Length: 311
Image 1: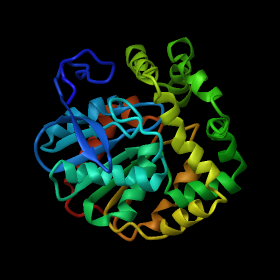
Image 2 (image 1 turned 120 degrees about the vertical axis):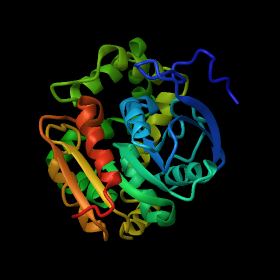
Image 3 (image 1 turned 90 degrees about the vertical axis):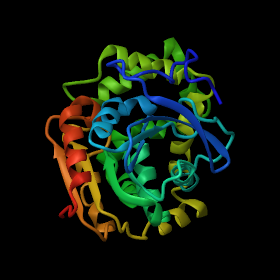
Image 4 (image 1 turned 135 degrees about the horizontal axis):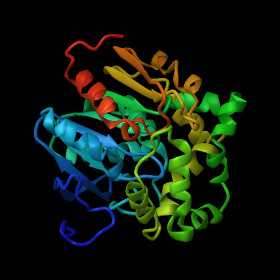
């Protein structure tokens, strides 16, 4: 196990100096880095692109203060987790998530996922429903809604131009790591609303992207998503995603999100056969949990504590 105190661009404390517990857990044939704070029912937080566990720095504190065991994991190939040569399809990545829940010794978890992490949270809730107690998804439609929007909505296709650009070999990796990860900073600022993350936080993401092999592993899930649209394995995956989600679901979105259009995400409730709550944050972009962490955390905690979340 890596020494949590060793200098690292990802094994860091929270901005207010709070020390989180950094450790590694084994799941689904790989090793995953987690950052943990608090005690109580497990809430597992899944980051998106181009980030790592640090994106949940505000929610770790809020959830721990509210009486939860808050755990933010680095997805396969990112942050402090293993960079394996394969395994970046969503079904396998979702098994990483549910494997971490088991490795943490918990019977289930409330999953909170943003962007790609949200895509995997939807997938995990459909594939392993017994391990998911509740589901909260940020800035990401249900996988079948995402596929339909990418194929049929010209505006969503244009908004997701970066995903299409990732299909080129090698060049995207070089672009993401050039000039100390400058492109990562531009993407985060461009995708945010009027209140982007602080420069120091953006620089943290840039350093993490420059860890060898991270850029390649970060892109691989998006390459699968596009290349599988017409392949048998992709068709089979999206067929499996017809299986409804049967746990209470909170769907959060920023009204100014330039990457995932509101109309693409809205309507995902048709795949949820349980209480479903849609919450649109006015004036926020693709990262509502960072752009207005107080409002986001309050919404999330209140919903988690609501014994009967309504539609």
